[in-house]
Image (cartoon, rainbow, N blue to C red; front, side):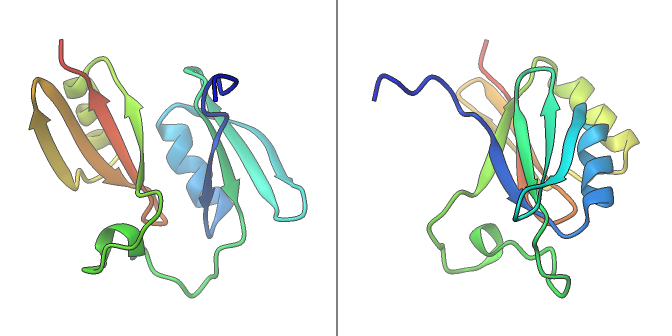
Length: 131
């Protein structure tokens, strides 16, 4: 459909707004509003235009285990969000300062990328395209 112009937002189900908000603020996202609506949802946005809807209805008794990424059985579904970056070393250094662990690194056909997890086990890729 030619009418689609971009991704409007990514929805992430989370357990604790304060913990998740701090994590994403450390990545440069700004808190806009929330919780609002029947779910409820909190909204954060990065200056790049990436918008996150934090859906605040995750069960408290869950772990950081991500069934889409951590199970041997490969379930269908969205596995991660990829954020394009300009300087992979600077981003990785900043994440290290924040105590955030890189879970995997990949170099493929000139592109470099690595993965981290948010406090609920949601996977985030930082992607530096090939020159």
